[in-house]
Length: 108
Ligand SMILES: [Zn+2]
Image (cartoon, rainbow, N blue to C red; front, top):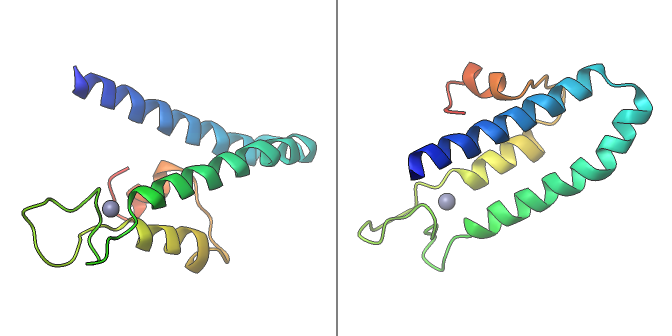
């Protein structure tokens, strides 16, 4: 049952991202402006919540991604992904939702 719920949640998130990509590509400027007013706040809140869940402990381990039996550094990639998406990759990119991840060989 958890697998069905997870698939449903993932599909809903991908559908929402695709919908937003479509609006960005096809909506008029006024609609885009109104969309930005709500979606930017939602996205920054989502990033903050995600980053808080992956904040490393005093040993540099992510509490969400590090199994208790593992020692050493976390395999968490959330902070690198955040930096890539929000800072390093902001100039001249052309993203289009899940297709961006597939082109880069990442799991959506
Ligand atoms: Zn993590």
